[in-house]
Image (cartoon, rainbow, N blue to C red; front, top):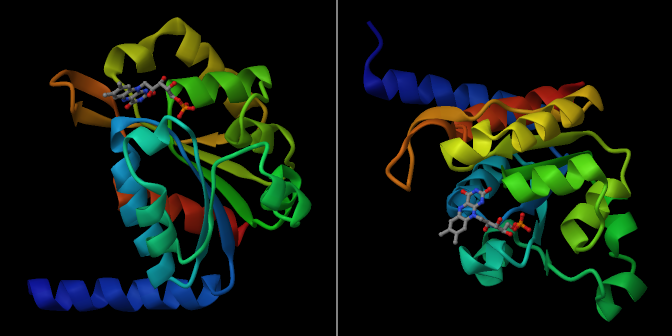
Length: 202
Ligand SMILES: Cc1cc2nc3c(=O)[nH]c(=O)nc-3n(C[C@H](O)[C@H](O)[C@H](O)COP(=O)(O)O)c2cc1C
């Protein structure tokens, strides 16, 4: 039987070998404004361990949950949050360049609002304008209250997004931050990372 140390060593070896395949891959991470936004920080670290760089967009709501400073410090890159940014739009890192410079766009956490905006083609902030202006593959990791997830509007948006080729992960099921129980929890970081590997290997 494998001890915990052997198990951990195997995990690190697997991750290192996956990481070498992934070296120099670039993810554009869109962080939505949900309670699970703090888990995107762990995702950035996990990707970095595998040599995958994350350039990040924070929505205005995301900034209520985590700070641009912690995202910048962990990603080692400038954080983008404004559509009408003179420096980004004229300095070559506007909404078009952000998506073109990425091998994959990951939305984590994908709020009900971001899913709705993407499904309906809205473009009123940097996050959803970038999603509309791209033909790069998009992976969404949703996280929201169980009623929001089960609402017919969200389910219709989910169906639309999947039909158009967006990979929308199924949320985890369990106790939520609001005390309710059901599907809607952000998938575990390891599950999101595995999905990112899968998408980047395609
Ligand atoms: C305390 C709190 C927690 C929230 N958590 C979530 C959440 O987990 N998922 C979600 O979809 N919306 C959540 N919301 C609502 C979003 O913040 C709101 O819909 C916001 O407009 C999302 O903006 P964005 O999609 O541009 O990031 C929460 C709101 C509050 C006040």
